[in-house]
Structures are given as structure tokens and as C-alpha cells.
Image 1 (cartoon, helix red, strand yellow):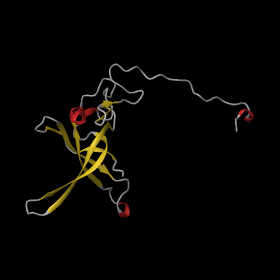
Image 2 (cartoon, helix red, strand yellow):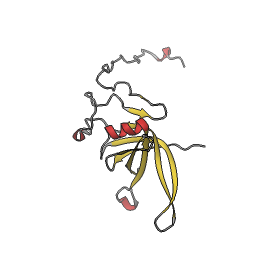
Image 3 (cartoon, one colour):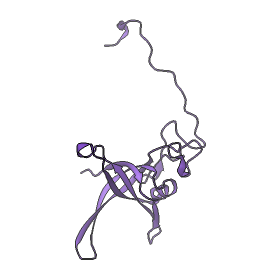
Image 4 (cartoon, helix red, strand yellow):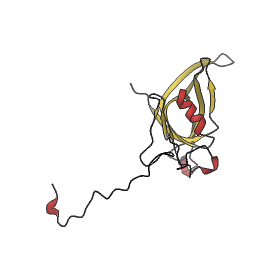
Length: 167
């Protein structure tokens, strides 16, 4: 069985960080995701809204570094929850349980929000994984202590004739 979802969109409001009775942090947030296609007859594209939850250190990470309007990438699983509304009708709510959260844009693209990114334009934590409680930054990006990306010479060279090709 496979239950995996990846979405990229903008936060509709600031993440809400709460704590369970056993002091486990959980962040709740909603992501607005534009559909890849427009409506009929060239109408405006539609937007889907996904409720998300991030637990423990991932939730704290989302609460600390993301604000309303931030571009976010969420990777996780869909989860349903059944309940009864005030009228006694059975309802089902769907939300995404975030396993990994990534920045969807750099600070330069999102500079007006001042959301606490590091001096190089990215936090030292460009992604955060709840399942392993570890973070990873793509090569060439990093925080204060990251070295500048190294420029390597091209691995390609011009051939004088096609006789040197191995096929």
C-alpha cells in the first residue's frame, strides 16, 4: 500500500503551534495550491486548500520559519478523521500529516516577510524531516557556516573527431 502526497503552495495563515497534554508540539496550517490547468473556456485556475499538521520538531520548524503567504513544500501522508457535527451527521475530514517540510522559495523572493532566514538567504535548515529528526540542506545552500559553492571545470571537452567515441 502507498499513501504519500507532496504539495507545493502558499500558507493561507500563520501556522498555529499548540501542545498536547503530554507537551508534544503540533503545528496546524493550511496550504493553498493552484491547479495546473484552468477552467473551461480559459477561465481562471482553481485553487485547492489542504489542511496540514506537523508534529514535534517539524511543527516547531514550521512555526518558526513560515508565515502567511510563504511558499512551502509539504511531503507526507493523507489521513482521514471521522466525527459527528452538531446536528449529529457523520462527517469525514481529511488532512496531511507532514513528514518533511521544505522552503518553496528563497528569502530574496520572499524578503518582505522577514521570517528569520540566515544571512545567505536560506536557513541552515532548508528542510526538516520528522521521521528521522534530521535536516539537510541542498549543496550550495546553507547558513552562516556553510562554505561557498565550489565551481568545477566542465567535465565535457570537445572531440576533434568522432573516432574517440566509445560507441
